[in-house]
Image 1 (cartoon, rainbow, N blue to C red):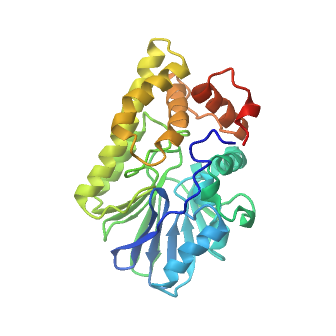
Image 2: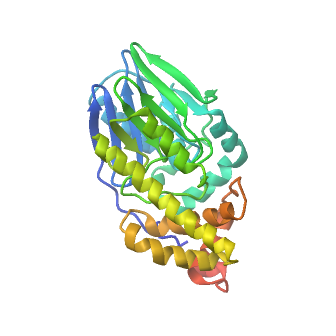
Image 3: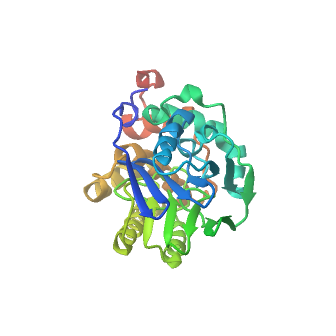
Length: 326
């Protein structure tokens, strides 16, 4: 399929591996999905597994440059395939997720896997190494604490935003937050499964923790309080601007296509330079439009729905699906 802005995106990104504090690292990749690393007294915890076991090996190789301790825990910030399908690459690790994230894997994990791989092939390098869906070994409600020796790691279901199960990893002593896709920096939030009305409260809950450093879901590590605030405010502004346009459009009876065109015209000058803007906006507008119409539980994305949506928004409703095939 050639319609998706990302399906022809084949260039590998430059990896950064930044130390946020003793034994704390952000693995970031120029707007591709990030991972976090926490080195405890006897073991390592990884936040977000990458998309394939082959790509997880790249993270492990970086970890091995700083420690030979085993990776014993992998925390999933949410259920999206690009974050979780590499988990089997961390052999023997215990996989932790919120109970809501597990429920979403049950409900829509397979459709999400098929849809995401079709949209973004570069992000699933070595996809033949994926054994299937990733299932957590441990789930929790609201909050759990993991003690890695004397290092306290709080794993918090922070609230609904990017998905209903969004989880952050918080180190209260070091004041470092691994935020998953609740926060982005210089990268367009993907909102296809989002809860726009709840997102501001979730960002407020992250701010209330008092993070001095933060690894967003996409974009570089944020290394000062000012940068953290910039990330929080940028994510809040994007999602509020989009939801405002959608609510106004629904109130006046506008079609999805009309809302999309208005959103692109209004938001491209401000956010169009953020990575994956062209890719995310059709999904973002579709979900914002649904939520503005009162659909609280996001509709499941399938490969077929992806094509139908793209045809309706980008190419006009008369275009036949066969024309979208590469």
